[in-house]
Length: 112
Image 1 (cartoon, one colour):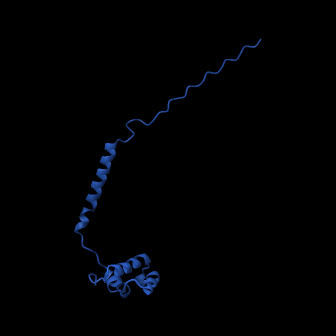
Image 2 (cartoon, helix red, strand yellow):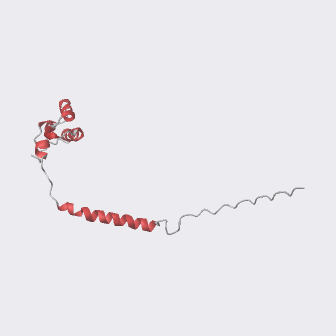
Image 3 (cartoon, helix red, strand yellow):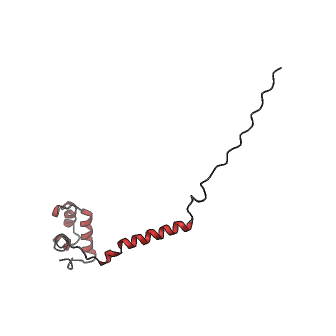
C-alpha cells in the first residue's frame, strides 16, 4: 500500500512593509519647506521694486499707433489679425490693446 503524500502547509502571507516612519514627511516639515521657498522667492524678486519701467517701443507700437488709438472697430480687428508692423505678429496682444482703448477710453496719452 502506498503512503499518503503529506499535505502542503499553507503559506503565511508576508507582512507588507510600509515606508519607514522617517521617510514620510510630516506636516510641519512640509510647512517649513513652503515657508523657505516663499522667503527665497521674495528675497530674489524684492529688488525689482526699485527698477524703472523700460519703454523701448511702446510709443511707436501703442501710443502713436492710429489703429490702437481708434479703438475696437471691424477694420482694426482685421489689422490686429494681419499686422506685422516692426516685424512683430501678435494678434492677441493687439486685440487686447484695442479692447483696452475701447472699453476704458484709453488713448495711450501717457505713453506718447
